[in-house]
Image (cartoon, rainbow, N blue to C red):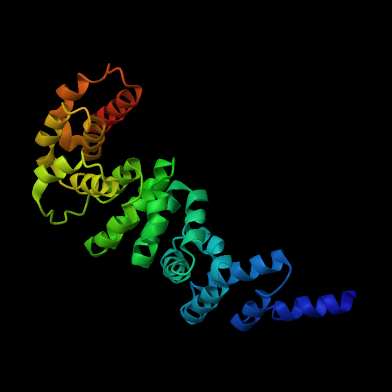
Length: 278
């Protein structure tokens, strides 16, 4: 490209020394130059803080889709842009929850917490992605997913149950931790749920585990008794860990299992003791 033509193009994109219009910025998003594309995104995000341009900038960022997520996530650390960036991420993330999840995994702990709230505001469409985030080895990622679940509220319990039917017991335990603020009505009562832990049907065990993790102290006495039943001992220990400090009464029984022959049981006991003792 001749220097004069290049200069004219730059002048046009920059508004000849002034602020680029939103239409110019939207056109710049089509640029094959990644630097120009990112610069346009950054300018659009800054426009979210301007009352007369925020609404249209949000619409443009939504049309940009997942390519706008990184810039919006970065804006969550700017107090002046945080609310507007969150609102824009709700729109963008509802169509691209997986890309939002990848951004969450790469973000700082503080930003992760804010992104968890974004997932909660997206609604039921975020449930499957949030459950996948509960499988993360990173406790901050799991905590962010828990914040998203907390904001989703009890209306999504049925969807969560459906998604958890074929998941591992560890993921179900993480889900129970994430959903501790919800106390759904438990049909059949706690005794039946404890018995269901021994069911040969894995989905039944998973749902029973999830509900027991939400019951609080009421389940502790029966879970302590369940420690004597070899077929459900590990699950009972894990659930006592999910209940955390609410399960303090189980400490004497758990300490007897610290030297168990089964290595998996010993690891679960150590995890549970750590959760109860805080």
